[in-house]
Image 1 (cartoon, rainbow, N blue to C red):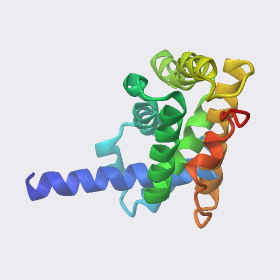
Image 2: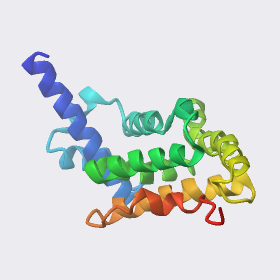
Image 3: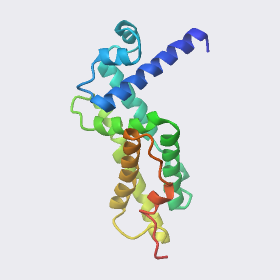
Image 4: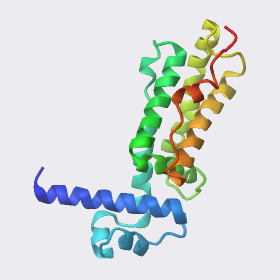
Length: 194
């Protein structure tokens, strides 16, 4: 990559990081484009060279977050608990090694409550609901095998994924917090009576 292209990409990342920090701390409505430019240590003109508006910048952050939400359960041939353990380990590793990823969880949660988002972004955000739904057959398989506790599979899925969401959000707000062991969250699902 040419030095100029590399500099442009670094500036773009700095804008995204600065905007994410402000959206998390101040909220979307209270964050002004001038705040983002100041946090990124650049002029508003230069910022507008990268993003046409605060809305476009916010939408780009949501798109990035939605890409991260797309979990592939192609490895669902594994033991069901191992599928959930691997997912929790991946997310906790990402959150503990990249502080921005924890902040993405906060942004994505907040974005789900905005009425003004374009339809395509609302559709992307519904991936979180699909993740819960995609987990149900894996939980049911684990229940049949006796490794996942009895109970409503959808409720168990909600408990698992919302625990991960809550942990990531807490770490975003308190970055010095140690990341829990993935097994602690997996134990929500685990049948301990076998």
